[in-house]
Length: 338
Image (tube, rainbow, N blue to C red; front, side):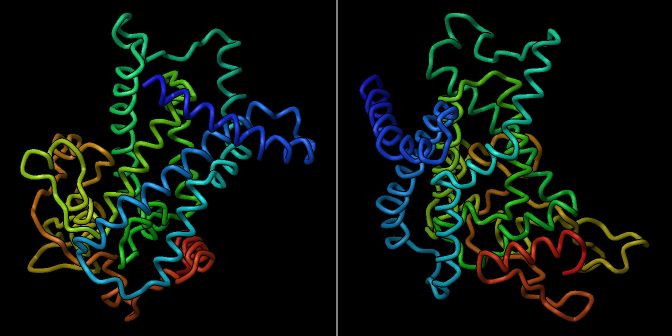
């Protein structure tokens, strides 16, 4: 473990001194060197993740694909999303827009006498062991992520943004970061608040994000893999998560019809509402506890129902093809214009 940490810190220092520091001095950002050093860590983690995706997950997709890739243009757009997020461009925007507000807010609270909770200080001698505290934080953040994901599917306004992620009908290892930027901004803001509240160290927060993102890339892969009857209940697999993306299965819930539901899509006295199954990000435990888990061994087409079935106006919904058109269509959906 020590050699791994030392190797990472050496590489981070090199990226900072040779690449970022000269640019920061040239741009008059000499007072922000500490932030630049942290950014070097995010960039290094992103480069490592992209390498793992391409070198390890890529061959798995070619070995056991669920379906043939027929729309490579939409996959190239997903690669752009991945590079924006994993190489730190989105983190830079988050730093400029959110981090100063969070620092000011929690700084004011500390001055007023309110200290944040240190989760890894619960059991001195146990949770202060680095790997134990990392596992503890992973579980806590995954629990929070489960409820954020439920919210993305439960609230109509939030689903209008999050549905872009589900609109990918050619899901691959690059599809995890295919999100509306406003959706990502809201989710990451909530996670930053949680990180401040539970007192996670910056280095551990980077590790948590890296582990989560890399697992999510594998979950979205176009690969026919599941973890077996018991493994499926320990960690989210590509099969488990693909069902979450399946048309009519993962993002919808069937409920009994009432007299007020005449306009809702239905079948045999039932209505389709927002909801779904398999919201877990890393651990399926929360789905099991909340009874939202579906462990059926099946591989269905992915996408959103209104992409393939006409809505009340007789048209299918357009989610956009390229990055900018997808972002613009998301804004139009949010304000009820698409």
